Length: 468
Image 1 (cartoon, rainbow, N blue to C red):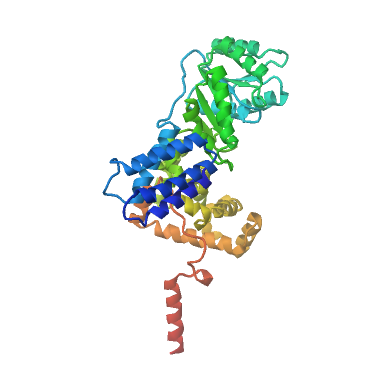
Image 2: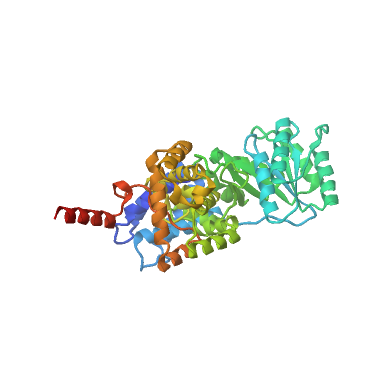
């Protein structure tokens, strides 16, 4: 979502790298470009103006560290100010009450129903007993969708298609949740087209009836500056406790994330980063600021790896590597674990400087072909790649929909990797990388015929001896 803003800011910082010192002249020019970048990203005008003035003051003040370059000084100040603008620290949920009631509100099409399911999955993973409530009675498809999501993640859904009053449905759901020992009750509500007075009054009635501990605005990040006006209006009527921004994986410019906290005083608590049920992340202002400035987010990557990668599987893999029994089944398992982390492109974007790699220097689509090739093999072939002769390679290539050379390339490189992994120093490095050995590049590096440089030299030497 922040790609355009990130590119523009990094372009601004490049101009400063050639400067020997920070002066009022070069700082003024840089601040002008930063302000334009923020405005193009749909950041509220007053907020952009205030942000730039604050950064300029710090750049020209005594707070600047004299031992680093001008570019580094400005990046550090902008990073701190961005984090401050978005809230400095992450804000958790209030889970007091029995049950804790979360009421989701927002405009029509903002993604409330999907977010309700994602939020339920998030808390279920943390060991909480969760129940969903279908409160969008004006759209039968929303009830069907919530019931489908609840079934998918194994969470009960309370609905009453015959009851015309949402406050009664919410009240009955609260009583059932209390009886069933539910920890968190998530109430989905009907969307509004802009601000509908009658519908807002309905929300006020529901809130007064069930007394939610969290009233969360689900806002589409593509709304830009309009998202700020919407959140202000909802906050005035309902007293919001937090905001969940959706569709951050799209082409939205990101202004909403940078403006909402400052204008409303309500923290952004979570962000939707994809369509899958697990694509809901806790919002960390400092980490988001680092991503925007191209410094990556290694902490979030490590946390996700810890959460997604099975420790028992990693231990088994370590034993196999040590005994040199690592086969294509294990390699396929590693590819799939990378997919759980969001794929190679997402992993690269979370590493410092990785954004440039994800754009072109790394062939992230290659992993899809690798998985297809391995899946086209039999279990016996995966366990013993050396039995895959020409006829088998041709069959695998047809099954995977790839060229024969790609199958041969995978097998040759895998054999080379197994030889390399026998070396103790390489083994130690692989273990340090969460049990995930790096695969050598599939393109080039191997002469025709599959022989390495040493084998080619030996062949040439034999030919010379025969001539003599």
